[in-house]
Image (cartoon, rainbow over all chains, first blue to last red; front, side, top):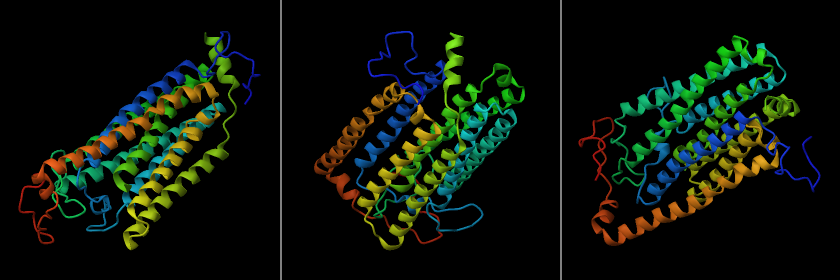
Length: 224
Length: 142
């Protein structure tokens, strides 16, 4: 990288930018750091409860439905589709950032619209999954599923599932709202007037973070 | 202030779209590997769940690395910034060890001193016939 300095260079003695990122971008990183600890606390408390329980439902026996397929036994397929949608919308987001670097306003618009569609598709999938589970009498405080060994399960399973995927879904929702605002600002030409598309990058950081959290949620709830 | 910001932005290297798609294929590939392993485990019971969980964790961390380094572009930032974010994140190592250990300890103690809980968690529930409504109220735990 161009900012590599000689060994005796002092980064923190003033006159230089030790991080060499724009202020808002740095603050977005620190916000994401704090948000990571919030999600981390949720997931670790889930792990703590799971380690302290004698039994736990088998995720493959719980999450096995697929829309419009009736009574199916397709574990992991639907949630893999959701993962694919989110990764795909992350890709379109990076492409929007890349287009912003080239100052290509039209391309930014195109990729932002695709990112928003991806986010909405993910939210729709989650809405369907929640509705389906609710139809099976699963909700906060209600757990119709037995443990993997056939013993009585507790509501910890559903409470953690709905709280954590709900918190993540809320992040996706706010990410979509932020992306829509960015799209409107781009359509109005705000970034072109400003001369840079750093706002797109900051929204992009948030959007990728949502994807990052989903990777962990996917592993903790559907695989382990 | 505004000047330093705009020059900092101007110095950043151009994004090229090639590594983006490469990262996408890596992430998709890892997810497909996870899906395949889970399906093989369901059909044959091999590899064992403990081995599989270790593999899942490694693959998850690999995915997280690629998202952070490439999509969030952190791998191309200055080392100062990378370290400012990576060092606090190392707290998670302690979090995981401490809380999972404590959870397991709680389970062991409860099984030792609460014999009702132990026997209750070893008694299978009579499964209702396929398709019929469960007799007890759903979610009525313990």
